[in-house]
Image 1 (cartoon, rainbow, N blue to C red):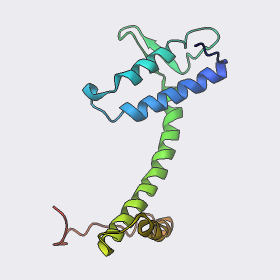
Image 2 (image 1 turned 30 degrees about the horizontal axis):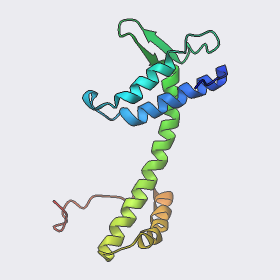
Image 3 (image 1 turned 90 degrees about the vertical axis):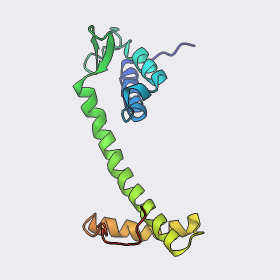
Image 4 (image 1 turned 120 degrees about the vertical axis):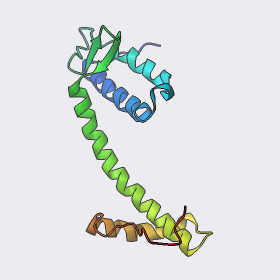
Length: 145
């Protein structure tokens, strides 16, 4: 199979590859990295030097390591998008977990519908107050250990 890409399409692919590989491997220890994703990243980056792709502003080759690396420009560009995702995901996850916790406190056999019914309450709270009214009850004797 052969895929033909314009310069613009290749640049978008490089951005997607960087974002995807970062999502999959950035949180892993070096010995836990999923190599197949690193390998495809290196393969895609290897085309960056071709005249028709001219992606030197996004990808650089390090001769000491014999590997391609994203440039600071690419990292900054993608990490702005990752930060947007993280911000949105934080609130969605907090809302879901708080609603789930409350639903299970009220009923050990709570359903997804019970959780969904509470999510709007938490969404309203966090939209209005952010984390200002969130605290940890350090003295709660019923806390899990």
